[in-house]
Length: 208
Ligand SMILES: [Zn+2]
Image (cartoon, rainbow, N blue to C red; front, top):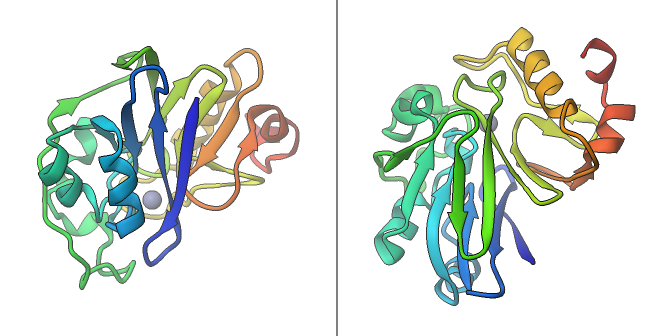
Protein backbone atom coordinates (compact mmCIF):
# COMPACT_ATOMS: atom_id res chain seq x y z
CA UNK A 1 0.00 0.00 0.00
CA UNK A 2 1.36 3.37 -0.92
CA UNK A 3 -0.14 6.58 0.36
CA UNK A 4 1.78 9.70 -0.62
CA UNK A 5 0.97 12.91 1.23
CA UNK A 6 1.37 16.37 -0.28
CA UNK A 7 0.89 19.36 1.98
CA UNK A 8 0.08 22.06 -0.52
CA UNK A 9 -1.77 25.26 -1.32
CA UNK A 10 -2.36 28.48 0.60
CA UNK A 11 -3.76 26.67 3.66
CA UNK A 12 -1.36 23.70 3.69
CA UNK A 13 -4.07 21.25 2.76
CA UNK A 14 -3.25 17.55 2.81
CA UNK A 15 -3.65 15.91 -0.59
CA UNK A 16 -3.16 12.14 -0.77
CA UNK A 17 -2.22 9.95 -3.71
CA UNK A 18 -3.31 6.39 -2.89
CA UNK A 19 -1.68 3.87 -5.21
CA UNK A 20 -2.50 0.18 -5.56
CA UNK A 21 1.02 -1.17 -5.92
CA UNK A 22 -0.18 -4.39 -7.59
CA UNK A 23 -1.71 -2.61 -10.58
CA UNK A 24 -0.33 0.96 -10.31
CA UNK A 25 -3.92 2.23 -10.45
CA UNK A 26 -4.50 5.18 -8.15
CA UNK A 27 -6.87 7.76 -6.75
CA UNK A 28 -6.07 11.26 -5.58
CA UNK A 29 -7.92 12.68 -2.60
CA UNK A 30 -8.43 16.45 -2.35
CA UNK A 31 -5.96 17.72 -4.97
CA UNK A 32 -5.44 21.04 -3.29
CA UNK A 33 -2.96 22.74 -5.59
CA UNK A 34 -1.23 21.79 -8.87
CA UNK A 35 2.36 21.58 -7.71
CA UNK A 36 4.87 20.03 -10.07
CA UNK A 37 5.64 17.31 -7.53
CA UNK A 38 1.99 16.29 -7.26
CA UNK A 39 1.42 16.33 -11.01
CA UNK A 40 4.59 14.35 -11.72
CA UNK A 41 3.72 11.79 -9.04
CA UNK A 42 0.23 11.35 -10.46
CA UNK A 43 1.63 10.89 -13.98
CA UNK A 44 3.69 7.91 -12.80
CA UNK A 45 0.45 6.09 -11.90
CA UNK A 46 -2.76 5.17 -13.67
CA UNK A 47 -5.12 7.65 -12.03
CA UNK A 48 -8.74 6.48 -12.01
CA UNK A 49 -10.56 8.90 -9.72
CA UNK A 50 -10.28 12.38 -8.22
CA UNK A 51 -12.03 12.00 -4.85
CA UNK A 52 -13.27 15.09 -3.04
CA UNK A 53 -14.05 14.98 0.66
CA UNK A 54 -15.73 18.35 0.03
CA UNK A 55 -15.30 21.25 -2.36
CA UNK A 56 -13.92 24.12 -0.33
CA UNK A 57 -11.51 26.08 -2.49
CA UNK A 58 -8.42 25.00 -0.58
CA UNK A 59 -9.10 21.34 -1.47
CA UNK A 60 -9.84 21.63 -5.19
CA UNK A 61 -7.40 23.98 -6.90
CA UNK A 62 -5.75 21.18 -8.90
CA UNK A 63 -8.92 19.36 -9.95
CA UNK A 64 -9.12 20.99 -13.39
CA UNK A 65 -5.45 20.43 -14.19
CA UNK A 66 -5.51 16.77 -13.14
CA UNK A 67 -8.76 16.15 -15.00
CA UNK A 68 -7.19 17.64 -18.11
CA UNK A 69 -4.08 15.46 -18.07
CA UNK A 70 -5.57 12.17 -16.85
CA UNK A 71 -9.30 12.25 -17.64
CA UNK A 72 -9.87 10.61 -14.27
CA UNK A 73 -13.44 10.85 -13.00
CA UNK A 74 -14.31 13.47 -10.38
CA UNK A 75 -16.17 11.86 -7.47
CA UNK A 76 -18.06 13.81 -4.80
CA UNK A 77 -21.38 14.17 -3.01
CA UNK A 78 -24.10 16.00 -4.92
CA UNK A 79 -24.30 18.70 -2.25
CA UNK A 80 -20.76 19.83 -3.18
CA UNK A 81 -21.56 20.44 -6.83
CA UNK A 82 -22.30 24.16 -6.52
CA UNK A 83 -19.04 24.69 -4.66
CA UNK A 84 -17.04 22.81 -7.29
CA UNK A 85 -18.72 24.93 -9.95
CA UNK A 86 -17.46 28.07 -8.24
CA UNK A 87 -20.24 29.10 -5.89
CA UNK A 88 -18.97 31.55 -3.27
CA UNK A 89 -19.80 29.02 -0.59
CA UNK A 90 -16.56 27.27 -1.62
CA UNK A 91 -14.91 30.20 0.21
CA UNK A 92 -12.45 31.09 -2.55
CA UNK A 93 -12.52 34.68 -1.37
CA UNK A 94 -12.32 33.99 2.33
CA UNK A 95 -9.54 31.45 1.86
CA UNK A 96 -7.50 33.72 -0.42
CA UNK A 97 -7.76 31.29 -3.33
CA UNK A 98 -9.15 33.77 -5.87
CA UNK A 99 -5.90 34.31 -7.75
CA UNK A 100 -5.03 30.68 -8.10
CA UNK A 101 -5.48 28.49 -11.15
CA UNK A 102 -9.03 27.49 -10.39
CA UNK A 103 -11.45 26.39 -13.08
CA UNK A 104 -14.95 25.23 -12.23
CA UNK A 105 -15.72 21.59 -12.86
CA UNK A 106 -18.71 19.29 -12.91
CA UNK A 107 -18.82 16.21 -10.72
CA UNK A 108 -18.65 13.06 -12.89
CA UNK A 109 -19.78 10.53 -10.29
CA UNK A 110 -22.14 11.40 -7.46
CA UNK A 111 -21.68 9.17 -4.45
CA UNK A 112 -23.58 8.82 -1.22
CA UNK A 113 -23.39 6.85 1.99
CA UNK A 114 -22.41 3.20 1.52
CA UNK A 115 -21.24 3.49 -2.08
CA UNK A 116 -17.98 1.81 -3.01
CA UNK A 117 -15.15 3.12 -5.15
CA UNK A 118 -13.00 0.40 -6.68
CA UNK A 119 -9.61 0.79 -8.35
CA UNK A 120 -6.96 -1.86 -8.90
CA UNK A 121 -7.38 -4.34 -6.05
CA UNK A 122 -8.58 -1.64 -3.63
CA UNK A 123 -11.98 -0.58 -2.40
CA UNK A 124 -12.93 2.62 -0.60
CA UNK A 125 -16.32 2.85 1.04
CA UNK A 126 -18.10 6.19 1.16
CA UNK A 127 -19.30 7.55 4.48
CA UNK A 128 -21.49 10.64 4.23
CA UNK A 129 -20.29 12.79 7.13
CA UNK A 130 -22.02 16.19 6.94
CA UNK A 131 -21.12 18.86 9.45
CA UNK A 132 -18.16 20.79 8.03
CA UNK A 133 -20.24 21.04 4.83
CA UNK A 134 -23.47 19.23 3.97
CA UNK A 135 -21.76 17.09 1.35
CA UNK A 136 -18.65 16.17 3.31
CA UNK A 137 -17.47 12.59 2.86
CA UNK A 138 -15.00 10.22 4.45
CA UNK A 139 -13.47 7.46 2.34
CA UNK A 140 -12.90 4.29 4.32
CA UNK A 141 -10.47 1.61 3.19
CA UNK A 142 -8.66 -1.27 4.82
CA UNK A 143 -7.67 0.24 8.20
CA UNK A 144 -7.51 3.73 6.71
CA UNK A 145 -9.86 6.71 6.59
CA UNK A 146 -9.44 9.78 4.42
CA UNK A 147 -11.39 12.22 6.55
CA UNK A 148 -11.18 15.64 4.88
CA UNK A 149 -12.11 18.40 7.31
CA UNK A 150 -14.47 16.30 9.43
CA UNK A 151 -11.98 15.10 12.05
CA UNK A 152 -8.43 16.26 12.77
CA UNK A 153 -5.87 15.01 15.29
CA UNK A 154 -7.37 16.25 18.56
CA UNK A 155 -9.73 18.59 16.77
CA UNK A 156 -12.58 18.84 14.28
CA UNK A 157 -13.71 20.82 11.25
CA UNK A 158 -15.34 24.22 11.56
CA UNK A 159 -19.12 24.23 11.26
CA UNK A 160 -19.67 27.98 10.85
CA UNK A 161 -19.29 28.01 7.06
CA UNK A 162 -22.24 27.82 4.63
CA UNK A 163 -24.10 24.47 4.98
CA UNK A 164 -22.08 23.60 8.11
CA UNK A 165 -23.87 22.13 11.14
CA UNK A 166 -22.49 21.28 14.56
CA UNK A 167 -25.26 18.77 15.30
CA UNK A 168 -24.64 17.07 11.96
CA UNK A 169 -20.93 16.93 12.80
CA UNK A 170 -21.71 15.19 16.08
CA UNK A 171 -23.84 12.65 14.20
CA UNK A 172 -20.96 12.14 11.76
CA UNK A 173 -18.51 11.59 14.61
CA UNK A 174 -20.93 9.00 15.97
CA UNK A 175 -20.95 7.28 12.59
CA UNK A 176 -17.13 7.22 12.49
CA UNK A 177 -16.85 6.04 16.08
CA UNK A 178 -19.20 3.12 15.28
CA UNK A 179 -16.58 1.66 12.94
CA UNK A 180 -15.09 -1.38 14.61
CA UNK A 181 -11.36 -1.89 14.94
CA UNK A 182 -8.70 0.75 14.57
CA UNK A 183 -7.95 2.91 11.55
CA UNK A 184 -5.30 5.42 10.57
CA UNK A 185 -7.05 8.71 9.91
CA UNK A 186 -5.63 10.88 7.12
CA UNK A 187 -7.18 14.31 7.67
CA UNK A 188 -7.41 17.33 5.38
CA UNK A 189 -4.99 19.34 7.48
CA UNK A 190 -2.14 18.64 9.86
CA UNK A 191 -0.90 15.28 11.09
CA UNK A 192 -2.42 11.83 10.77
CA UNK A 193 -4.06 10.23 13.78
CA UNK A 194 -5.94 7.05 14.64
CA UNK A 195 -9.61 6.38 15.26
CA UNK A 196 -8.71 4.93 18.64
CA UNK A 197 -6.90 8.10 19.73
CA UNK A 198 -9.78 10.30 18.58
CA UNK A 199 -12.30 8.12 20.43
CA UNK A 200 -10.20 8.66 23.55
CA UNK A 201 -8.93 12.21 23.22
CA UNK A 202 -10.94 14.19 20.68
CA UNK A 203 -12.81 17.07 22.39
CA UNK A 204 -16.04 15.96 20.66
CA UNK A 205 -15.79 12.37 21.92
CA UNK A 206 -17.61 13.20 25.19
CA UNK A 207 -20.66 14.41 23.24
CA UNK A 208 -20.87 11.49 20.82
ZN1 LIG B 1 -13.08 22.71 4.32
